[in-house]
Amino acid sequence: MSCSNCKNKFREVEKQTEGVLKKGIGMVQSYASALASRGFNNKKVAEPTKQLRVLSCFGNQHLNGELPPCQHLQQSKTPGKHYCGGCGCGDRDATWLIAEPEKYSKLDHPSLACPLMMPGFTNYKASEPDESEQPITRKYYIENIDYKEIRKIKVSIPEAKTKDT
Ligand code: SF4
Image 1 (cartoon, rainbow, N blue to C red):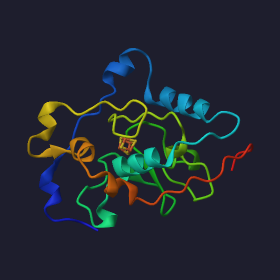
Image 2 (image 1 turned 45 degrees about the vertical axis):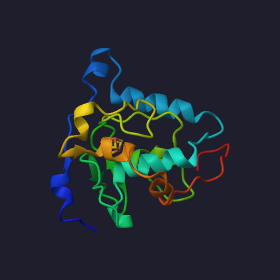
Image 3 (image 1 turned 180 degrees about the vertical axis):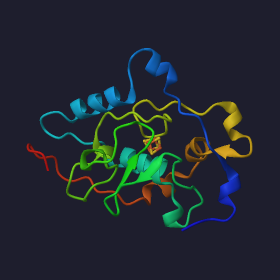
Protein backbone atom coordinates (compact mmCIF):
# COMPACT_ATOMS: atom_id res chain seq x y z
CA MET A 1 0.00 0.00 0.00
CA SER A 2 1.46 3.39 -0.84
CA CYS A 3 0.92 6.79 0.69
CA SER A 4 1.05 9.76 -1.65
CA ASN A 5 2.25 12.19 1.03
CA CYS A 6 4.86 9.89 2.53
CA LYS A 7 7.40 10.29 -0.24
CA ASN A 8 8.15 13.85 0.79
CA LYS A 9 7.80 13.28 4.52
CA PHE A 10 10.84 11.02 4.95
CA ARG A 11 14.41 11.60 3.86
CA GLU A 12 16.97 8.98 2.96
CA VAL A 13 20.06 8.71 5.12
CA GLU A 14 23.65 7.64 4.62
CA LYS A 15 24.82 4.26 5.78
CA GLN A 16 26.38 4.62 9.21
CA THR A 17 28.96 1.87 8.93
CA GLU A 18 32.06 3.80 7.91
CA GLY A 19 33.40 4.32 11.40
CA VAL A 20 32.78 0.70 12.19
CA LEU A 21 34.38 -0.49 8.95
CA LYS A 22 37.50 1.53 9.64
CA LYS A 23 37.93 -0.48 12.79
CA GLY A 24 37.79 -3.65 10.68
CA ILE A 25 34.33 -4.75 11.77
CA GLY A 26 32.24 -4.90 8.62
CA MET A 27 28.59 -5.81 8.27
CA VAL A 28 29.47 -9.31 7.09
CA GLN A 29 31.49 -9.80 10.25
CA SER A 30 28.58 -8.39 12.20
CA TYR A 31 26.39 -11.01 10.59
CA ALA A 32 28.85 -13.68 11.68
CA SER A 33 28.46 -12.37 15.23
CA ALA A 34 24.70 -12.58 14.79
CA LEU A 35 25.01 -16.23 13.82
CA ALA A 36 27.14 -16.85 16.89
CA SER A 37 24.49 -15.23 19.08
CA ARG A 38 22.07 -17.93 17.95
CA GLY A 39 24.06 -20.42 20.01
CA PHE A 40 23.43 -24.13 20.27
CA ASN A 41 19.80 -23.70 21.29
CA ASN A 42 18.70 -21.39 18.48
CA LYS A 43 18.14 -18.52 20.88
CA LYS A 44 15.76 -15.93 19.49
CA VAL A 45 15.09 -12.31 19.98
CA ALA A 46 12.13 -11.19 22.12
CA GLU A 47 8.88 -10.47 20.27
CA PRO A 48 8.76 -6.67 20.84
CA THR A 49 12.33 -6.36 19.55
CA LYS A 50 11.49 -8.37 16.45
CA GLN A 51 8.41 -6.19 15.89
CA LEU A 52 10.63 -3.12 16.09
CA ARG A 53 13.06 -4.65 13.60
CA VAL A 54 10.23 -5.47 11.20
CA LEU A 55 9.05 -1.88 11.46
CA SER A 56 12.58 -0.61 10.79
CA CYS A 57 12.97 -2.79 7.69
CA PHE A 58 9.46 -2.97 6.25
CA GLY A 59 7.73 0.17 7.54
CA ASN A 60 4.01 0.01 8.30
CA GLN A 61 2.27 0.97 5.10
CA HIS A 62 0.93 -2.59 4.91
CA LEU A 63 -0.93 -1.76 8.16
CA ASN A 64 -2.29 1.50 6.73
CA GLY A 65 0.54 3.41 8.40
CA GLU A 66 2.67 6.04 6.72
CA LEU A 67 6.19 4.67 7.20
CA PRO A 68 7.66 3.43 3.90
CA PRO A 69 10.05 0.47 3.75
CA CYS A 70 13.74 1.04 4.40
CA GLN A 71 15.73 2.35 1.45
CA HIS A 72 17.92 -0.79 1.65
CA LEU A 73 15.11 -3.33 1.67
CA GLN A 74 15.51 -5.57 -1.39
CA GLN A 75 13.12 -8.10 -2.87
CA SER A 76 14.62 -11.54 -3.12
CA LYS A 77 14.61 -13.51 -6.35
CA THR A 78 12.47 -15.88 -4.30
CA PRO A 79 8.95 -14.46 -4.37
CA GLY A 80 7.73 -13.03 -1.10
CA LYS A 81 11.15 -12.86 0.55
CA HIS A 82 13.33 -9.84 1.28
CA TYR A 83 16.89 -9.18 2.29
CA CYS A 84 18.93 -6.18 3.39
CA GLY A 85 20.86 -4.67 0.50
CA GLY A 86 22.88 -2.49 2.85
CA CYS A 87 24.87 -5.15 4.65
CA GLY A 88 26.39 -7.11 1.75
CA CYS A 89 25.13 -10.50 2.87
CA GLY A 90 23.32 -11.18 -0.39
CA ASP A 91 20.13 -13.02 -1.26
CA ARG A 92 19.90 -16.52 0.19
CA ASP A 93 17.57 -18.22 2.59
CA ALA A 94 19.88 -17.57 5.56
CA THR A 95 19.81 -13.82 4.92
CA TRP A 96 16.09 -13.39 4.35
CA LEU A 97 14.86 -10.96 6.94
CA ILE A 98 11.70 -13.01 7.47
CA ALA A 99 11.53 -16.65 6.45
CA GLU A 100 8.65 -19.08 6.83
CA PRO A 101 6.93 -18.69 10.24
CA GLU A 102 8.42 -21.91 11.61
CA LYS A 103 11.95 -21.17 10.36
CA TYR A 104 14.76 -19.20 11.92
CA SER A 105 15.12 -15.94 10.01
CA LYS A 106 17.71 -13.21 10.06
CA LEU A 107 15.57 -10.93 12.24
CA ASP A 108 15.40 -13.69 14.86
CA HIS A 109 19.05 -13.47 15.85
CA PRO A 110 19.44 -12.11 19.39
CA SER A 111 22.40 -10.01 18.29
CA LEU A 112 21.99 -8.34 14.90
CA ALA A 113 23.51 -5.16 13.43
CA CYS A 114 21.84 -2.81 10.94
CA PRO A 115 23.81 -0.61 8.51
CA LEU A 116 21.57 2.30 9.47
CA MET A 117 21.68 1.52 13.19
CA MET A 118 17.92 1.42 13.32
CA PRO A 119 15.69 0.74 16.35
CA GLY A 120 15.49 -2.90 17.41
CA PHE A 121 19.00 -3.77 16.27
CA THR A 122 21.95 -4.39 18.56
CA ASN A 123 23.95 -1.45 17.21
CA TYR A 124 20.99 0.98 17.43
CA LYS A 125 22.07 4.57 17.73
CA ALA A 126 19.53 7.26 18.61
CA SER A 127 18.66 9.84 15.95
CA GLU A 128 20.48 13.14 15.78
CA PRO A 129 18.55 16.31 16.72
CA ASP A 130 18.32 17.45 13.09
CA GLU A 131 16.52 14.24 12.12
CA SER A 132 13.33 15.77 13.52
CA GLU A 133 13.45 18.50 10.89
CA GLN A 134 11.31 18.10 7.78
CA PRO A 135 11.69 15.88 5.95
CA ILE A 136 12.22 13.69 9.01
CA THR A 137 14.11 10.40 9.04
CA ARG A 138 12.47 7.02 9.39
CA LYS A 139 14.49 6.50 12.57
CA TYR A 140 13.08 9.64 14.19
CA TYR A 141 9.57 8.58 13.18
CA ILE A 142 9.98 5.13 14.75
CA GLU A 143 11.43 6.60 17.93
CA ASN A 144 8.28 8.65 18.34
CA ILE A 145 5.66 6.15 17.24
CA ASP A 146 3.01 4.98 19.68
CA TYR A 147 4.06 1.66 21.23
CA LYS A 148 0.61 0.28 20.37
CA GLU A 149 1.47 0.63 16.68
CA ILE A 150 4.60 -1.47 17.16
CA ARG A 151 2.66 -4.20 18.97
CA LYS A 152 0.21 -4.43 16.06
CA ILE A 153 2.93 -5.86 13.85
CA LYS A 154 2.46 -9.59 13.43
CA VAL A 155 5.61 -11.63 13.89
CA SER A 156 6.27 -15.28 14.60
CA ILE A 157 8.74 -16.49 17.18
CA PRO A 158 8.85 -20.28 16.80
CA GLU A 159 9.89 -22.42 19.72
CA ALA A 160 13.62 -22.77 20.12
CA LYS A 161 14.89 -26.11 18.85
CA THR A 162 18.23 -27.76 19.18
CA LYS A 163 18.60 -28.38 15.42
CA ASP A 164 18.42 -25.97 12.47
CA THR A 165 14.82 -25.39 11.52
S1 SF4 B 1 18.64 -4.14 8.41
FE1 SF4 B 1 18.65 -1.88 8.56
S2 SF4 B 1 19.44 -1.14 6.60
FE2 SF4 B 1 18.84 -3.29 6.31
S3 SF4 B 1 16.73 -3.23 5.53
FE3 SF4 B 1 16.60 -3.42 7.77
S4 SF4 B 1 16.48 -1.32 8.55
FE4 SF4 B 1 17.23 -1.21 6.44
